[in-house]
Image (tube, rainbow, N blue to C red; front, side, top):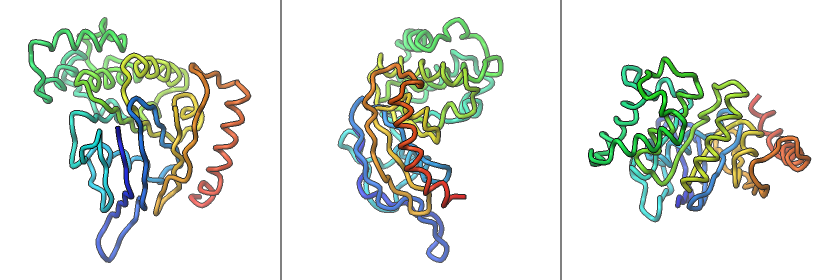
Length: 254
């Protein structure tokens, strides 16, 4: 579904440069749930922006379903950490979803059924007349996800979407997202710096080194059935393995 080949990203000028990513290569399968994990400043969001088409790579290439990524596309949508900033506060829940359909020029005849389908999927159909300010943090993120799904993308790109939520809401959102992923079969690329979150969600975890010159240092298969019990000894073992792999980079970042 997504192929990243020798991607390098350099910011700045010829006299003052910062190499954020250095020859990153990655294949992401159709329907896969991939987490990109690493400390702050490791280039996770930069790589996600390149996958979205928001940022061009300095060198290397990215393809989506075999086609070169040269900008934003309907096949890929982004979910941001701050849902409050991503949503339009003057529009209701229903109107926020409708806005995405209008922008993507989806035929009006199907709008009502699409909106109903995805508001039900994220359990917001009873709140369709409310404004974002009247919703909890978790509900705002569910609205952002509904707006993403309504345009029928192939890939969901998620940049630490639950980082600002409290622990209980975050766990609930993990269950909501996994249910949506299993029902829709979408490809998900999820950025996080939380080891437990990555283990809870991912098919595979891509470990990224701290910048500059960030690379993917290791791909880890999470071969456990879902839902995953974080008290399972296998989870604790995997957590400790990942923490040990991250330790040198964390020390260097400090």
